[in-house]
Amino acid sequence: MKRIILVHGSPTKEEFLKNSTSPANAHWFPWLKEKAKNFNLNFFALDYPRPYDPIYEEWVNLFSTQIVDKNSILIGHSAGAGFLLRFLSENRNIVVNKVILVAPWLDPKKELNTSFLEFSLDTTLDKRNNIFVFLSTDDDSDLIESFLIIKKAFPDIHYLEYADKGHFCDKTFPEIITVIQSTD
Image (cartoon, rainbow, N blue to C red; front, side):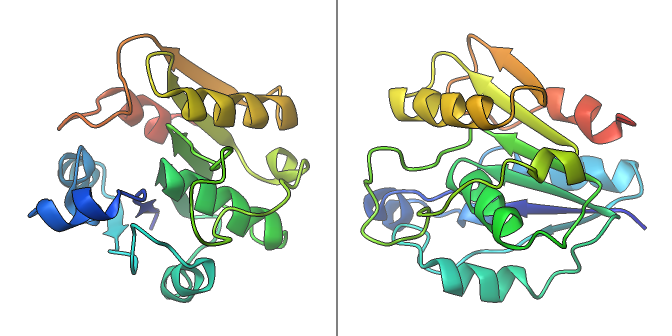
């Protein structure tokens, strides 16, 4: 059975402490969990440790509890998308059904105090995995910069650009369903 594995982003410590919702249950994630049931997909969204100050090895330890194979649809939002790019770049033997990056962030301005997103993109990643990138041109400049880094590394993957989605933090995200259900 196919499964969706969602990796949330990295809120600031202030956002994390004031928010009553866990990062794995923020934004459109609960909505997608409900939709996944309609499509007979298992859905997994874990709360990664210290999301405001992430340590890559800690996130890998938790992520590695999931079955990641050709039946997996990996979805990363913001820093979660950066995490997936790093994980798949460093684990070239892993091939999945799809990789969906939503407002991917690669920390181009080195804002994190950790080496969480310090890595080299494997430019053959798109040869092994079907990658889709969602970006809104009204997102922050460091997200646009991250997008340009990804587009330079992978000019031929699927890009879905919008002008009015910000950082994709709404309660629903119907556009992602089309990509989840697509066959390419």
